[in-house]
Amino acid sequence: MGLFDRISRVVRANLNDLVGKAEDPEKVLEQAVIDMQENLVQLRQAVARTIAEQKRTEKQYNQNSDESNKWHQRAQLALKKGDEALAREALQRRKSYADTATVLKTQLDGQTGQVEALKRQLIALESKIAEAKTKKNMLKARAQAAKAQRELQETVGNMSTGSAMAAFERMEDKVVALEAETQAAHEIGGAGLEEQFAQLEAGGDIDAELDAMKAQMLGGSSPDQAALPEAQPSTEAPQDSAMDAELEALREQLRKS
Image (cartoon, rainbow, N blue to C red; front, side, top):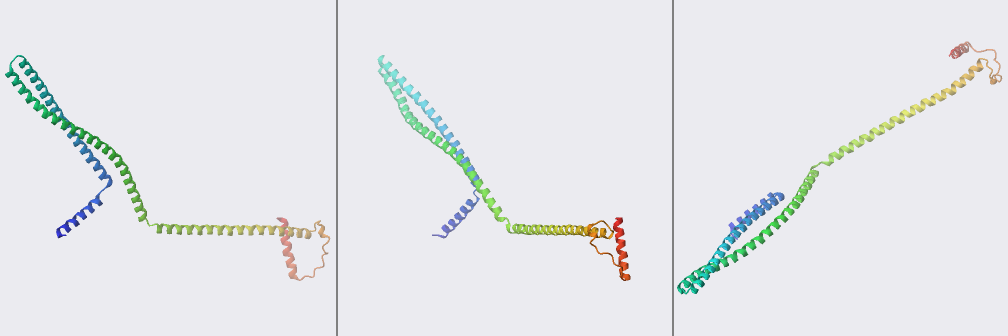
């Protein structure tokens, strides 16, 4: 293989690769339909020209056929009148028109076949164009769907989900920590309330007991008073007397309250 052949093949391969990459299915399909429609227009024009030629040939054929028949009748008339020379001249004219009509008839038959073939091609091309338009719309829809899916995949592929998920995990840990702190605060607050109410309840018992003691000391009519021993002469030291005085002051305050 020659050097120039190898270079030519490499160039053609690269060009084909570039063209293949540059091809957009939607644009190529649209252009293909446009080309087919242009071919349809050209074919219709060709059919119209062929039909026009056929009509002219048919008209010429009919004229020459009519002239041939007319000169045939004139030859018969001249022969009836006994003018053989005139009849011969008329037959020569007839033959000329008849020969032309024969040629035109052959041409007319060829044109008729050509027109019929072009009409069949026209119908076939119109059918192909209609099919191509339907297929074009379907392929365009598939191409658009494929492009959308490819763009979606590229978008998803370019997204950095690692950092986003890490952020979610951090925020979840913070929420869990806040919930734990709230629960702990609630439990601590609840324990304080329980303790306060327990102290109040215990204080109520003490108050009742203190009231009973005050009643006894004030000489009330409590049944338990008879069971108390009689007061003994005080032999307490002066310190005990001071304590008694303080207790008496407390009792006075309680009575006033």
